[in-house]
Amino acid sequence: MSATQTSERVVVVGAGMAAARLADEVAGRGGRVALIGDEPHAPYNRILLSAVLEGTHDPAALELGLRDDVDLRLGNRVVEIHRAEREIELADRSRMPYDTLVLATGAIPTLPPIRGLVQVDGRLHQKVHAFRSLADCRRLDAAVPDARTAVVVGGGLLGLQVARALSVRGLEVEVVEGGEHLLRSQVDEKAGRIIARDLKRLGATVYTGARAVRLTDAGLVLDNGFTLDTDLVVLTAGGRPSTALARRAGLDVRRGVVVDDQLRTSDERILAIGDCAQHRGRTTGFVPPAWEQAGLAAAHLAGEQVAYAGTRSVARLRATGLDVAVLGDPTTAEGEVVEVTNPVVGSHRRLVVHGGRIVAGTLVGDLSRVGLITQHFDRGTVLGTGEPGRLLMPERTAAPAVLADDAEVCACAGVSAGRIRACASYDDARTTTRATTGCGGCAAVVASLVTEGALA
Image 1 (spheres, rainbow, N blue to C red):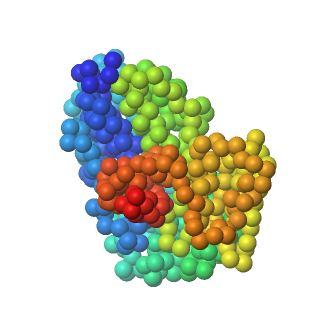
Image 2 (cartoon, helix red, strand yellow):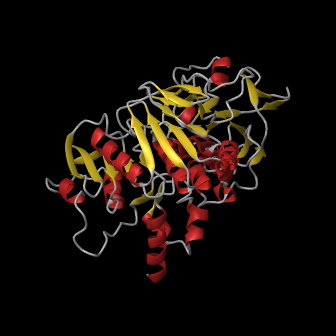
Image 3 (cartoon, rainbow, N blue to C red):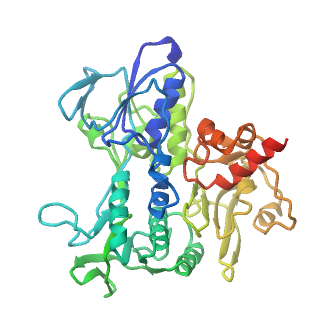
């Protein structure tokens, strides 16, 4: 039975990117859907918060459009799930019935073990800023004009984006990463060293293999004995799936809310998607798999026979002057490694190939062939013996590689080159396909493809 043939009500808890995608697709199929979010803002693109901080995007540009028939409830926090009655309870003790409930509660930040972050009244120290929400971004943005220095705790994707944004704003920025190199969860040591060099070239100082242990009047104290005098401390390290609601409801929860191949929890009337979900023992923190799960969940709710088998994710670092793309999981993928490193120009390109197929990859400093490499990665193309090496070399001709119409150009939204070429304009592509509204890394390719389509 399709969603257009049923009066069943779908209630989505959470109003993040995965939740918005699901609600919009359910409504687009004719389904009845309510979206419950505890923030006062309409769903927005969290990935581009650093672009707002940098000043290249207006906050209004981050809003994710929803169909008019989505029942959007903002500023509402769900506190309990009453499974027997199929109702959710809100903070004001009102209740809402559901036929199917979808948990899209995302992840919550965890405070690093740094003494002095929290004051005796339970609030963060006035110098300390989290960076997970639009409210966090606005608070930090308001503090920047009166600051001269900032320390970013965490050398992951978000930490580097924030560090670069603050550098662009004119602050002296220092990055503290407890691991031995930057982006340690996504790239190897060679790539991490090159990223650190790029960041230093752009004006930031990097401390790796060091942990912040205490915030004092003198500054942020590291375990290597250094004390960093700073006006701002930005926390970007640490997060975990938000599972408290599911635990209280008695659902199967481990690190995340456990789901099967149809994204159903231990209660078949309740699904979970995005950062809060755990599928086959794994949780994810990226937009492409979250949106993939949202699309599959919408199809499942419409009665289609679908199964989620995991994702071939592509992550892009969205920061001015820092070019990084990560395909799959290069740190754990098994296969033969093909790599080309040029520390002089600051580039590192590495592919993991198994059975002739690209199963993972890291591209740092030179993304000129990321579209073609991603195309082969997504398709599982069996490459010839010399092809992986040639893919890592710079283009020898002025003519760029032509992407096939079915090649995916926006990993976040799952949009093909053909769909982009069919759009009338760049804005049309953004509106109708959601391309560029995720990490933003495909913006240049989308602009080029729209031009191609107009000239065809």
